[in-house]
Image (tube, rainbow over all chains, first blue to last red; front, side, top):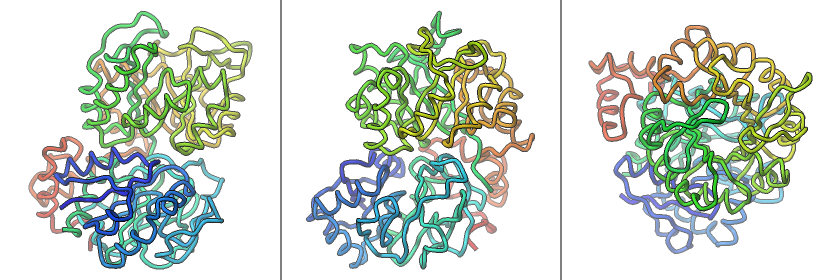
Length: 203
Length: 296
């Protein structure tokens, strides 16, 4: 198996590459429509500003090939911004359209708590899921974000939430589309198990 | 269920080797950065900071190589800094594998640097390091590794840094640094009261009680220390057990996994003891577990 890492020029893809490598899986960085369109397994890592990611997808003409690959059933994993991009829009850049694979808008976490939501937090599991197989219920994952798919707006696909000021979608799973708000590549052994689950589903 | 308090070992390097001094002076060699990073990753550190305290221009490639070597050992976040004066400096550090960059002296000299970094990498990747020293009823910002005073008030400066786009404050007490007499609780508490971003307290840690105090009374979100971890004075695992027993929420990966693994007949086994090469045992263990929470 080879995982195609969507490299849009801003996210730190190195740590994801390394995490996959530790699990014995090869990966290739890709930033052209042709490679994305024909990808076997797709991973969209994301860190930074929502607008940077969405603009890069459009400027590089990656939006349609990405959506086409997902529609033909290629297993897809979005990380952090890679989860947020799947919704219709984000409060971080309202003028831009998200990938619209899930209904709802990504919102800023409420300012009553310290932001960014940065550090290790636990999940509240909503329903059984393949992505969370073999994950202890009290496992911690590393989060670093200020915007989130706040649960009430999230619509379908949510299998686990996390709470920081508000409850938000932490794990999404629908058919071949998987996404996590935390960073599995920086979440120690529990994060490695998430990646392993995804790779198992993609195999 | 809430955000766990973080324990962060810090590697002060001369670019290539880990060094540590008392009150930012009299440096001594404390080991290989990559070897220490691997140890802390396995012991349950929540994050790692690596600093180039020499920060000389001609040593820069050496430091970037150190970041690469350290990042390769980690499955936890990495912050790097020391001598970052421009967007290009920061980009080099991020490309080498750092998740966050920390700025100090250069941000005091040119506060817009904070905004530039925040726009480029996001606030979550920008850590403003504030070195504070007590002076006439407040704390003054010190720069150049605690050598020069600035006249700035540490709490006001941190607040300004946050408004410019810093996503985290790394607060070091110059009075306490290297003394092992405990964190500066009044300084930490004053800062925590005012800043709206996570706060990392640093300087003066030795005993587990010091950490309990900085979380409970100082309201820090994370605590950073260097030499006590390097010298083996304090193990991260034991420290976290101590804090958990005091009711402070910390990430204790061993607790749940050890019980789960009893079903898999590996009751004394702990996930974070396991280096990446032994990860297959992790799943084998879970496979044998008949009652894994979270996957009913």
